[in-house]
Image (cartoon, rainbow, N blue to C red; front, top):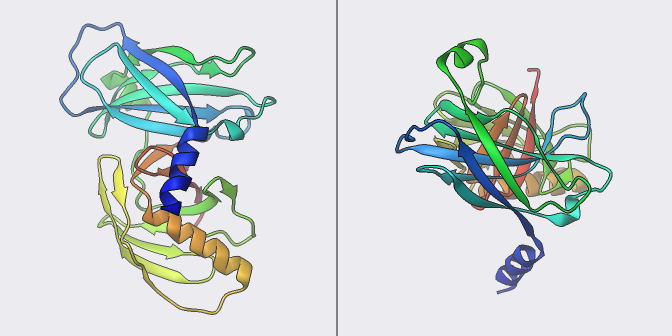
Length: 243
């Protein structure tokens, strides 16, 4: 009951942005089309945008109205925020927003109309957009909204058979995950070493593993990766690391 009460409280504290997505082309979407909407912190031009909230929806046509929830406690009036949206069919990008739609800029903007542009075959050839998360060493930068607080970050590596290996900051773990069309799930328990760890390292490792057990989806953007829960809330932020 305490857990349910905490979850309800968190939901009550959240706010949402109402978004309408459309495109000009008069074409039907494929049956497996999915819409991704993301809220980004775009304050620092020299760094990759930081994902604050994201959600994926099945989409059959446009215009489509959706609601993206976010935690108002993480919004800083000194920062700049924007929305982006894309439509995928399987692994193929078919529509995307070609500009950042600014929010919280001056007036408290809660309604945003996003116009998407068709992504053509020539665009796909000219600009490869990586969506795969395998074959990369991912380093943790943030867990449950808190930056990784020591100099030896946890890492995650996934091979093409979906076998994963984890360094949690002290112990190492292995297993196999299920990955399909943006949906991902880790096993409930991890096989691994049982080394004695300093209290700080043990606490960080525990929070990381607990977050992974709640993972349901992911968003790949540039050199970054965000794993999310079933509601699209960010659980773990990663960035690519050199092997």
